[in-house]
Length: 322
Image 1 (cartoon, one colour):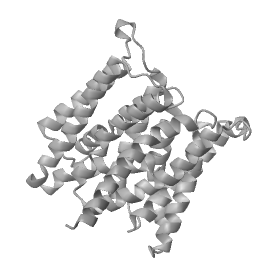
Image 2 (cartoon, rainbow, N blue to C red):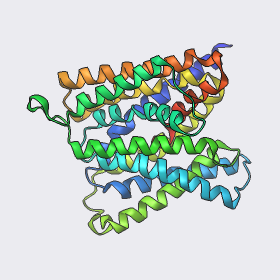
Image 3 (cartoon, rainbow, N blue to C red):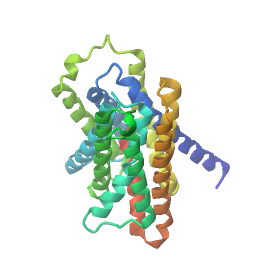
C-alpha cells in the first residue's frame, strides 16, 4: 500500500473519531435554544437531501417505491428512535455521558442477534463483555441512588437507553430489509423519512409553537449546520472505510467516540467528570473493546459469527448520519 492510501485511511479514521465524537456536544449546544425533535428533523432533512442528491449525481439510479417503505421503517427505528431520542435525552443528560450510554449499542446488537430465530450465540468473552458493560451503565446511572449519589438525570438516561435499543433493532432489521444497492442513497432515504417524521413529532408536541427564531442562539444554529454538514460528510467517509479496511477496525469508533465526547464536553461545555464517571467510563469502554475484539477474534471460525461485528459497526452511522 502506498503512502497516499495509508494517509487517506488515517485521515478517514481521524474524521469518524473526531467528528462523530463531537456531535454529542453539538447536539447539547443546539438543544439549548432549539426544541429536540425539530432540531433532529432539520438536521436529517438537510443531511438526507445532501446524501440523496449526491448518490443520484453519482449515478445510483432512482429507488423503487418499495425501497421507500423499508428505508422509512429503518429511519423510524434509527433516525427517529435512535437519534431523535438521544437529542431529546440530551436536554437533561451531559453530552459526554450521553455518548457513553450510546456506546452500549453493540451490546444490544449482540443480544438481538442471539435471541432472533436462528440467531448467533456469542462466545463467552462477548457475554462477559456485555455483562460488564451493563454493570458499568448501572453504576453510572445508579438507579437506587446508593450512597445518595445521583449524577445523571434518570429520565433522560432512560430515554437514551431506549434510543440505543431502537438503534439496535434498526441495525438488525436493516441487514435483511430490501434497500437500494447504493449505501449512500439508502442512508439518504432513511434520513429524509426520519426527518419528516421528526418534524411531525415536533408539530404534534407543540414545539413549532414554542419555537422562536429570535430566541435561537448563534451557537445553536451553527451546531445544527455542523451536524447536517460535517456529520453527513463523516458518514460518507465511514462508508468508504467500511469498503477499504476490516469492519473490526472501523468498529473502534465504539470506544473512541465516548472518550472524545467526554473530553470535549468537559473542556468546551464545563461538564463535570467525577470519579464515578471515570470509573463507569473505564468499565463500559473496556467492555465495548472486549465485545468488538472477541467477535473479531472469532472471524476465522465462521462467516456467520462475523456478521455480529458487521452489525455492531452498522449501529453508529444513522446516529450521526449526522
